Length: 266
Picture 1 (cartoon, rainbow, N blue to C red):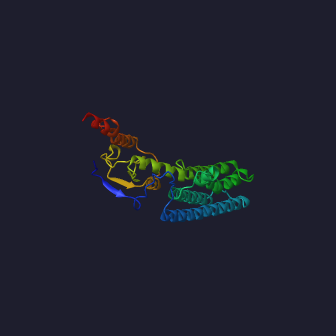
Picture 2: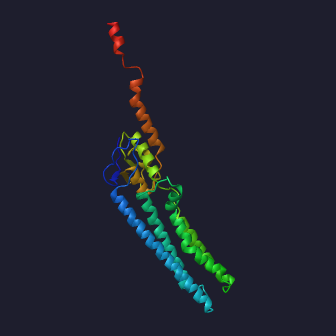
């Protein structure tokens, strides 16, 4: 069976067969290069966020020391700029990890690399919040206003940097092997723009609804890179398992005659 939906192929050619038990996922040279670029830009954005925080602290202290209100457009504007830079850096960092995932062998480094966006959110806002709340020259109202703004910015940046579906070499390897085992040795799956699972069959009813205009096809890694999808459709999995059983069944149902028995009856 096939689908009448538009099929868009993502990525390059299919990866080599990975049914070999020694197979370990290795990102392509192109993906690794792109991941390094994303990481470089993320670091630059985070450095910019730290600079924005330093200027916000300086303007805050300057206003306090001159007897002016620290709640001004410049301090608030720098806090917003800080948030934008941290958030954008975290998005790029998470994309880089999907292109070139870390290994789970060292748990500390694995979690650090995946959750670095959260750490940078604290680095970019916590010192500012401490300066605001601990300065004895600032009145309670100003502390409440600026502290709340910086606190909300920290929360948004932390949520933006948090990675709930952490990429890893081991996860890519395991799921690629699972798909190839169910898919006749082929490493390709299907997904949609708003879907949360990838599929083994392009005609799966879950991705052939009236609201679906386009179906994407690519490897397991492509699905993770494009949509952060690592969940295999249960319906497709059960269908593939049933198809494999039907192939094996004729060999085990006793319909093949024993040649030695046949010869003895002649």
